[in-house]
Length: 477
Image (cartoon, rainbow, N blue to C red; front, top):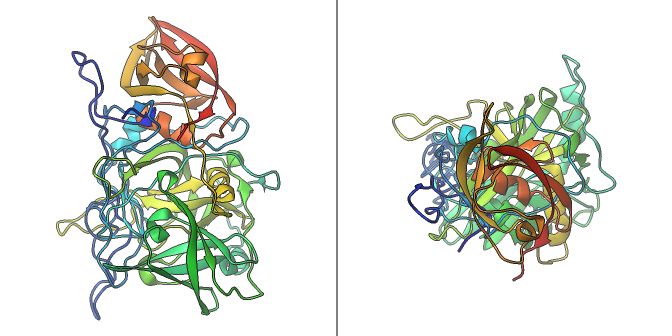
């Protein structure tokens, strides 16, 4: 099935259609360590799970093509999520649909194309259940494989600009005290064991946002607040294609403190940030760093062998330490506002297949997270935007410079792409000034855009640089 948002292996010029999508299986979470044993088994980036199996450490390979028409992309990153007493989840390598979510036009991003991210093949996403992101390891799961993906989306009208202070010494102690009550630890139990992740409090009714790989397959959920109280919770809704889920406490206390979300389109490279979570089961842990890059293409595969649960994200990259168990937790700015949901890391595994944070963490932008969360809170169905093209990684030149991007292999009749005038052979190089370095990058960006929103595509056609306007639609069914 073609998916305009699903990257696939590099296209053979002699072939008429792109090969299957690339991506490593994500695994968030790692099995709980035995007494006296190391807290996490597999490393991100190594193996699937955050501690085991494919890690986000496996990044998509450069040159891999992706089908953008079907709206599903293969994920190559694995979520980070720390499995506590059971085996980590296993991921799949099938493509997943692209989600749309950002309303309005975000500020231009400076980030490498899909190829650059794919080069991080040794990394894995830090998700709680476990999945591998192309080049990123999920830090929450050391052994399991599950998809992780996220794209930048639109922010709610109440969202405020991110705090981009350049102060050399933000008051992190005060910020931690302010934000910690809005972050919770999540213990997920399945038939194969348990894994641990993190969540963000959305409202006083006990609604919590986390990663799908943390809570999606749970048979039971136990949520622990920063002051040590534990509550049972149940899943309200999940969206595997963006690796997001909403859960709710069954008997919430009256003093829950909802988090404040910022407009992630205002985030800039270099601004200071803090990550909160439960790395390796260590609750109430905070780490600090900066925003290292924006619009970083990240993909992760889930458990389905056909790649149908693969996720793609146009992520915020940070050097704040993120490890298994951090999945689903908040990445906040110097004002304590949530700018992203931590979901994966890139890492270099050692001889035993284990690895740790090397300062390459990835978060789903807050705008995308809230776009999806608002649709899930009432148990609703999430709508994802799509372009309607099948793409592969490609190159082109205009006689004076060369370009990398997502080469259109096929255009779906009656789709937004067809109405916009996209044609086979076009090389899409950008969306609203955000660089598109390959098929996977295109998928990740589209997943963060809102259904019905209009955008400008930059492309190279017949040796000439051109622009087209496209209005994204929702994929039927």
